[in-house]
Image (cartoon, rainbow, N blue to C red):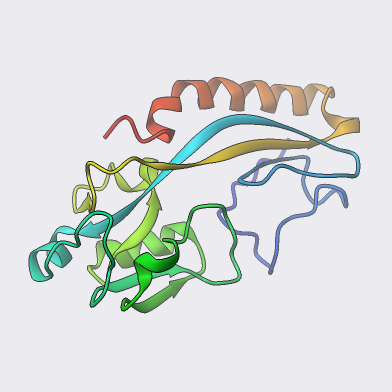
Length: 181
């Protein structure tokens, strides 16, 4: 069995399970139509983060206010997930200074002090140089879906992978939900 972990496929778009480009995927969107089976396997919390250096050199934004006069790092506009972009009016007056092609590049930009970015808590919280910009704000969460092609979901190799993923996701559920720093 080959296992490939991709933050973003090597070409534009997602790997297509229906075309057999992959057998199993974890996605932020529920698969619809075709012969794909999906089920929710967890929740991934997101929050706005900044580096200690950025916070030391800029006034901390007011929770519930705007991010005017702040630098923002964000995912490339073509990448869509339910909550990876800070929303709406909060960005009024802010400057988007970096667009990253994946979450790990986005975290690097935030760690370098280039601006405030919305990151999964499970990726940002372990970083000693990052802080939640609004530590008391409720977290925003995305559903995480396991997607598999219907005709391979019961094969031994796919079943083994799904069981391993289920066990690991259960073990890290609190971290994914942003409840463990």
